[in-house]
Every structure is written in C-alpha cells, then in structure tokens.
Length: 273
Image: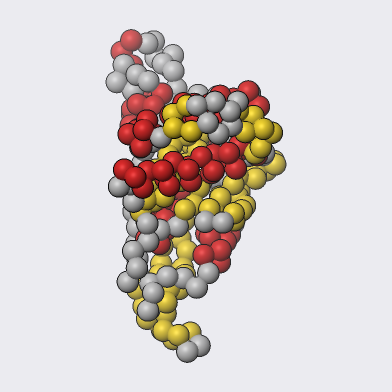
C-alpha cells in the first residue's frame, strides 16, 4: 500500500458551521460569520473553506510534526495487510492529530465580503497559535497571494522550537522548455536538494499542467516565489482552455515518511454580485 493511499485513508471527518446574524457596524450592515472546523489539519481546512467562499488564494504549508501530542498512529485502523507482519512490526501510518478551530468575522451585507482579508486571516492564525499543539504560523501577503507559513512546532521533548519553512529555501532551476508538470517536478527536486527533505507531487489539475509550456527558470529565488509565479503563469495560460480559476497549493507533511507532498488545487474566480 503506497504512502499516498495510506494518507487518503487516514483523512478525518471535518465540518463547517456557519451561524449568521445581521447587525450594524457604524453605518454599514454586516453579517457575523462563525467558522468552525474539526479536522486533522484544522487550519488547512479553514483556509480551504475561506478560499471557496471568498475566492481568496491562500497557500498553506504544514509544519514538520514531531511530538506525540501532534501525531496519531492509525496503523491498526487503515492498514489492510497487517496479516503479513508479526504483531507490532507493520510499518506505522502516522497522521496529524488535529483538533477543533473556530473564528468569528464580519462580512458586509451588500458584498458578502469582509472589509479586510488580512484581518480575517490574522484572526485565524491567532486562534491556531493560541492552541498548545498543531504548530504556529505567520502570514505573508504578496499581491493576490496570502501565504500561511509554519514558524514553530513542538520537538520530540514537547518544547516549542523554531522551524524554518521549506519554501523559504533558495532554489535555482535551469531555463529550458518544459511542460507545467515537468516544471513542478523541477521545483520539488530543487527543494529536495536545498533542504535535504523529500518533496513529491500529489494532486494537481493534470490536463492544465500537461498542456502548459514555458522556458522560465529561476536563479537563487525563494521556492515560494518560484512556485507562486509558476501557478500564476499556468492559470493565466489556461484561460485559452476555458480555465476559469486561480491556483493555490497545500504542502502537506507525512510524519511517518518524514516527507512532504505538494498538492495544487483550483480556486474559482470571484463572481460579481
């Protein structure tokens, strides 16, 4: 059974609770939204829901989970080949433990949008950073992109320690003609080399990336910037294929494999009211 298959089997149930209440803030009528999730990766799930509702491009990167309080062993519940191993000798399947995360924010009644995207995302990160597990994060805004970046995690002793983002690594990629898929593989390979941590490609819009081609390279640039520029080029180029969405990513950590999987997903364009 492949690590990717095991990861899919170990996904937990998540839910969204939206409580709506209209009130007046200054001269503006606003609606109070309660966003509540329970998930293996609660902050990633909350980001997914915000992106879907508001058409925000929000990227997410897992911290490298190390402490027992951040990890669940789900080997017994997900492996279907335990009969091939002696008791306790089957390769472990480890997943983030997760939990519940809840925030409240206002949207304008006339636009159904918050007044300030940064305020909402900071509220989300503050709620996560107040928890005693699951990592701590910072927000970086760059044009249309909002990046949620890990900054600290509990080590194996349970002490909070600083953790560098994988995508802060400086990478270089030769300028040569390649497909979007080949470019993704090149970015992952460059991150592997810079960080000595394995990064592989997970899910992505296959046809879109197979049809896209360019000759763009990179010279000592942050991996985050290289990836963001590539996704912007691919989504813009995809307009010729009737592609009506932006692209974002989730860089997810497998604590059992001690490796990352890069998943690319679409964010529908905002529909005007």
